[in-house]
Length: 436
Image (cartoon, helix red, strand yellow):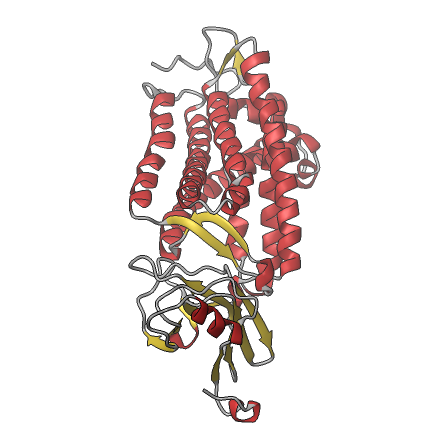
């Protein structure tokens, strides 16, 4: 035990126990009073595979009873720290086969090259490190959160209008393309809903509730990605075949693919225990945000990022082909220049709708590195938060023309082309045959 502050400066790691801790240990009438400060190196990692400062874990014990709710804090001091990552003091109660680090009862104090953990209980302690490029300032996170909540609220409002118009106001039989769009709208509405309640569920500190919330949000995200791909496939197939799909039970097949396959993925991940609490780190640990999500980064990159990369490549390629074809068609039919076409409000609204319908705006997440990280966060957040509004505009522009009288079938993609190219669409006079 070292008392002199001058001597303490000679050590890179100092643990300071308050007088209150000794008094509390004595009041518990422990038969075996003692003080033990244990250091563990290379302790088994947690489920999140977190990085620990110096790969060390400290355990502080005073007798056999738990000592908690100390008014005078226990201080664990690290000095001469040169790591560029963002530190966060965490504790673990020792339960379970793997550590479950939490911020409860611990505060992180950073002063130049010194990190101090101020904790109110005795247990296992460690300093978790989040890479600097994975954190965001507390103010930026606050602004992004406000934009996201407002945007998702508006998005849900306009998605509700689309569903209301489709199920209650529509008086004609919807085309296959319109029904596919409604499936996408439904999936996106449920994704926005689970996202908005995510933080509320995380604050309940209910482990099973958080896991279920994370699984539901992940499921609806995967279904939304899949419907993006289905939209692109349907659009390309209609343009290629002139509105004649010719696939038996086409809508049933794409619906099973989009709604059922993500359930299989979710069940597998849930059984592997990959859902739970995830902390969004900021430069000020006091403002860190906890959400319910995938706790294993490897699973996140493989399942989410990997899957969306495949979807993005397919949808973006389809989008480029369709837009090129539309511009070429418009120019050939009216003699207008591409510059004139790009300024046409109707064309712009349709193109924005196509981008949202095929999920291309999610591609801005690929630029979230280096100097472009923060700007890409804002662009990604704004565009995807208002995705429901853009889909509403797209539905208004194309939805009614994609609905036919009972007994008829048509392609909304061809009506989309018709809305941009007027009467120059060579497929307008095509009479599609009924799908079997």
